[in-house]
Image (cartoon, rainbow, N blue to C red; front, side):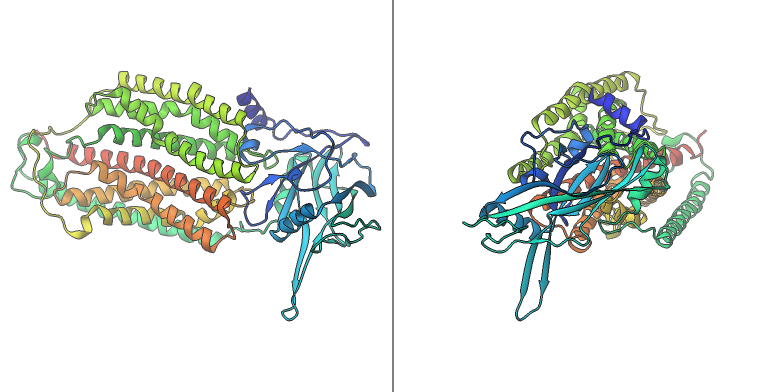
Length: 594
């Protein structure tokens, strides 16, 4: 049922709801939270505000629930194209505890989010003013009147926002009890009257372009200006880097082939043992590595995330994610993760069989748990903290069961099916040279060929290729921006994979030239270390590019940043390995053989 809803949202995101004059336009209240902590959100009705006697919640999609949405019907009565002037919403008598709750929320810069015709409406709960030094003035006020400004075109709602212009806030002083709106209640209580107005304006923007209106609205700070110069600069540097690596390697390999193939007679096994360099280790370079099952699981899950990321970007380019559909990308990512599990099972078990792996059942289980286990552990910690704090980001039990069912009934079975198909269709490992029984001793290596150095080089260069775009992505994921630069994202993604592949080939060649044949895990770690640089960048972003704070927001940020780093490590490690394997097969197959 949920899968069908996700597909319907993607296919019909441009469908316009038609209203006639006087029709009721439902306004849903959604959530509140600190302005600087986007993922720390609470239900709107946790504050002492006007609420119906019985709260009716809107049916939400999976993506909306994951995004922390908890929409409920409000007391606001809005009718299509009918203006309202200062209509009373309700009158509340607030206890001293409730006044303190509102004061605390306003001092933490709480904002609210309403939803009208799939359009989010944001505003601040109250007003805070700091002035003077001696004497110091600290004023806190509550907005009790909201002006709704709604734009329409024909029978459709185009845009909506809320304003408090020319409205005075109600002061919330320590120890309530002042008269407000002509009504005063003693005994430490405060009586407030909430009102609202509605104004309709005709818009020239068609419904199909209403996303542009929302994108241009600036309640939250705009951080996604296009820095074309930075993007072009990054692109030029990457092109120069790739050209340098390719040209140098081609020239060096050409000289190697010319030297190694001179007066060579016999097969690859009879090559002169007096030579040095990568040719001399031809009998060891295809010696299978330790921890074969783990290596194959990394390659399988990496291939799955490559498929998933490519599919998400292509779907975004096709316009399947409308900014008015809350959590559409979240829903699509979960569905695609479950469906692409067959890719991880197939790739992992197929290669595991090729390198003479025997415990293929364990390999399938390891492949299935390699990412899902850290994901479940991280989610358990983050969700527990959200549940403890009462945040709407804490998933309800029904959603947890739905996600668990998707993995148990779809994800894991597809991994098993993919593994079985991969095992049965796996051919032999295509090695141009035979491997001898006794491994060759590896000579001592200089410091610049050690694993840590290769990881630093192989991780930093791909990271530098995406550093500009990474800021935009973080501002979208950990902010409230709507990312729309999917064409640029596709280019950056392709550049990232290209740089990772080229750097991996170069580092593998330098490793082999030092007569070190243990390239299997080294190729995965060299470029896979990009994930470490991304996590370090996330720490920098948290401290210097955001105003996030508190246990709830910090736990979610660093927990999911670790998972993001793991995803990049798996993806780039997989690309790095397959590139190195293809390169090694090419150079040893190109040696002169009679």
